[in-house]
Length: 207
Image (cartoon, rainbow, N blue to C red; front, side, top):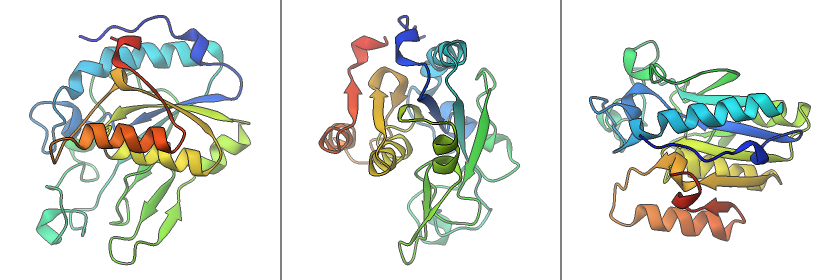
């Protein structure tokens, strides 16, 4: 299992922790869209949650919550196998995850729910904001730490949206895993994050 270094210095007033999609379909080997090694980060994620709460930082969890039929799924013309269908065990958080704080559900209306901050219409590409940006603004948050699954999709898109909103964003690589639908997607995602001004911490910082 991954073990975390002391991380209290990451958190405090104005900093929020965003835990992305630590759900059974992604984080367990039997999940329909298993992200290799996803279960390995659960203990370290829990340590981050504990540190954030102790420092007074708000914690938000995102949760894919798809309808049974959606253009997001390959069965209706999309890319992905059906996953995280609302109310199914696959959509539940990993049983060992310490879920504390508000849960932001995404993809509930059949849209692509990659980012915790926004959903995207699969046809038109039009974006609709979730409540996350408003919640962070109300809490006086200026910086976020983004962890969870997966680094080349929902973690990346959440981090990029955070930068678009003017937030300082940190993505610790030891606290995510990558789908790598195509070889090299992980490296491309890291490059994109860095180009957008996201502080990407190397694995050695957390593992």
